[in-house]
Image (cartoon, rainbow, N blue to C red; front, side, top):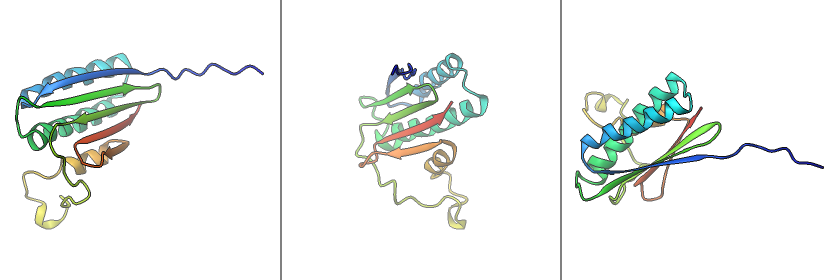
Length: 141
């Protein structure tokens, strides 16, 4: 019995960014290149752009404390039906299980604290590593 050939190849993209907010432009360029190459729908593209901006800014500011000697490593693995992004910083991580709810009345006027909440709502799947210095984001394409 002959087995059907199933196309399961993936392509990997990697960025290493210095921990400064200007580095986000390189990430945005990569997101646009991948979205164009793989014909990503506009709503998925917008969600990826929002989530990855949030994740990278958090890694730069909170993880690496704007220390330009520390890198933020971003990987995108493009598979036939999804893109899996990982964002890793060189910081100690954080307790992602114990975040304040940005929708509770006492937090509504806070200027920060919404990034992870937004990411969890826009990505198809969001996974943190045990220490909290890597986030994995899945988007169906």
